[in-house]
Image (tube, rainbow, N blue to C red; front, side, top):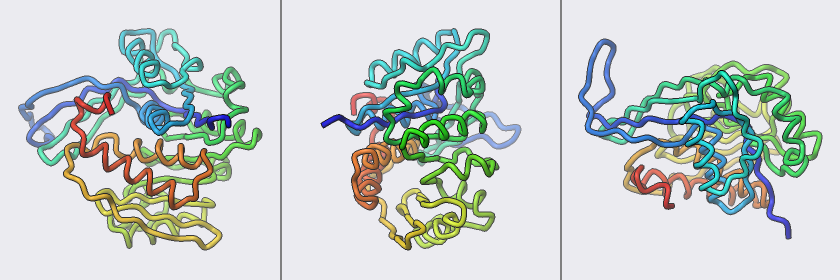
Length: 296
């Protein structure tokens, strides 16, 4: 049996991660303890997560013609992601981010999109051979809306399903919204899309998911250490508690969830089973120190 393909169209960032006692307030300088580099971007992270979950994973994206771009491509190779359609964008720097982690393992980050903003319909056309094989397409909000529309149209035309991780939160066009099969958001993003306050609890996530199916056929709302809720227009709805673990770092937990979920969806697993597997994958990640995650 052919192993299903998850295609990720999205961002690649070279991350600089800083450990500090707390994140600085406006005008404040904080003395950190350590820093380390990591290959990331929501798109890159989700592609690696899908590959780790055992499906075929392909990445469509762009990096700069620089050392960061070289490192990002090497990481995709090392983790088993098909990156033939990751373009090297001449004259543009690679996307980068700086994330500052506090003593509780929570973080805040700044991203500079760089080459990711050069993505467009031409990149989808060039990747036609993977588009037609795609069972599940993963999108995020770190590339232009028009590029996401082109990717979603192409995969829908070939019979694939489209999953949008609507992060970071931003206003989505009606054209893109109409192409989405499943939206995945956290409480902050759900609040932005639903236009109402969302409490970061299982009950709050469930209510947010119910509101989001006014615009999307299915909605998944994650609530951090509380768990995750699902709702769709058929009337199906459930919530799963988070897997209890000792949190070392929350960085990348959402992307791990999305990639693992897409792998289960591509395999045809029932929705609750796919979400439960993704929940477990995210829990395993947050319990693993950053320096040991490459060996997971």
